[in-house]
View 1 (cartoon, one colour):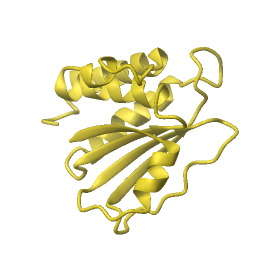
View 2: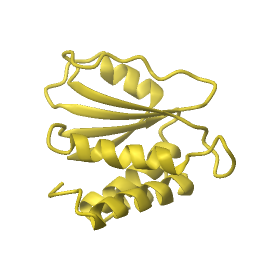
View 3: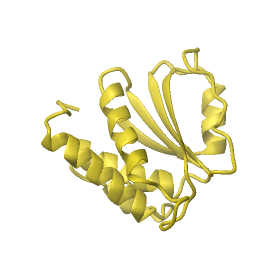
View 4: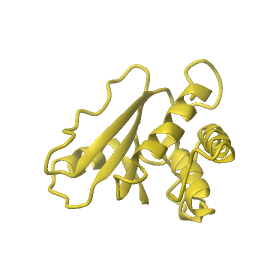
Length: 147
């Protein structure tokens, strides 16, 4: 499964186009906003969407919580055989989505240089740490198999 980081605008454009590959989407959006409205199951190739509402901060009640990270780990496990592409999306496609994508890549490919090696990303390290911990815990319980 390929992993791609997108902004909200990029995802909205992607969802309006026709795609042959099947994609799953993790959408992260601020607590005062709504999830991006995208068609699932249409010609755009999007088969599943996980909407998560938390702010791009590293502390406090509005930050990503462990429950969000567990939901992401379960979602990745759920779509690993059906999706060819995993789109990880937040408002600008630079911080929350980059942190989450880096953790996913670390656990499914053993490396996150696709994210940490690029200057366009500034990964939210809370997101990275929590998702990495949740995915590592699933791996230890052998819930992930051959991603």
